[in-house]
Image 1 (cartoon, rainbow, N blue to C red):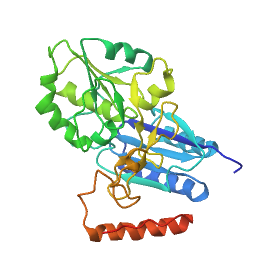
Image 2 (image 1 turned 30 degrees about the vertical axis):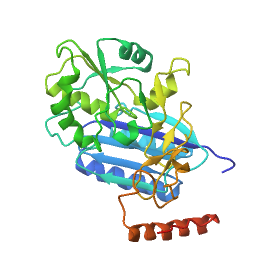
Image 3 (image 1 turned 180 degrees about the horizontal axis):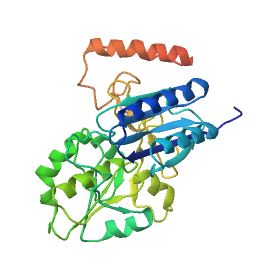
Image 4 (image 1 turned 135 degrees about the vertical axis):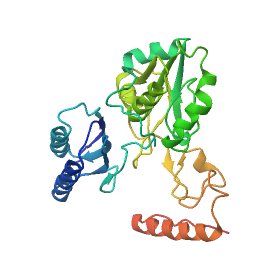
Length: 310
C-alpha cells in the first residue's frame, strides 16, 4: 500500500448471541484474516460482541457488513480513527462468558440500562451541581487522563467495580433519589454495563456518555473540551491525545503500565526492564530475562542495546 492509512474501528453491541453463531462468525473472520491484512482483538460471548479491528478501509467494510448480519443490524456503537501503522500484531478472537467482565449474572444491558447522553449534552450534565461523575475505567487509565472532578474508584479491573459500588457509592450521593449519576469509559461499554448494575440496585437518574471518551474527543472542539490528559487505549498506541492521534505514553514491557515521556527520564527507568511502577516488583533474575528480551528487540530494530546493571 502506498503510504496507506489503517482504519481502526472500536465497537461493541449487547445482544443475545447463540453459541453456534459465535463459532460460525469466528471462522468467517479468520478466513477474512487469512486473505487480508486484518488485525485486532474481538471478544464474543452470549451477551454480545466487543473489540477493536485494524485494516484498510475495504477490509473493514467487509468485516462490518459481516458483523451486522450476525448482530441483526443492531447498533455496533462504532468509533473510528486512523493510523499510519498497524496497532495490533494479528487478529485475536476470544470467546468468554462476558464481553466485558463484571461478574454479576443478574444484570442485562440489553433489557435495562441508563440514559445515553451524547457528547454535546455531556458537558452540561457534568457541570450540574446535582451530578456526580464516575470514571468506570481502571486506575492506570484514569491516571493519564479523565474528566475534572470525576470520581476514581481506583479499581485494578472492571470486576472490582460492583464491590466499589456496594462499599462507597452512597457516600458520594447527597440524596440517593435525586442526585444525577453520570458515568463514562473509553468507548461506552463499561459505563453502559455499570448503569445496568446500578439500576438493578435501585439507583435513579443514571446516565452514561454515549460512545465514551473516544466519541467525545471526536465530537467536541478543543475550546469546549472538558477531558484532561490523554485517553488510554488497549493497543500499540497506548494513549490518544485530544485529536485522537498517538499520545505521549508508551508501555513498560516489564509491568504493562503506561509511562510518560517524563517517567522515561527518571533514573529508575530502564527501557523494557523496569519503570517507577515496578522497580520493587521483580527479582534480578526477572530483570535479566527482561534485558535479554529487550536486546533481542533492539537487534531486530537495529537499535542500541539496553544494559541492566545489578
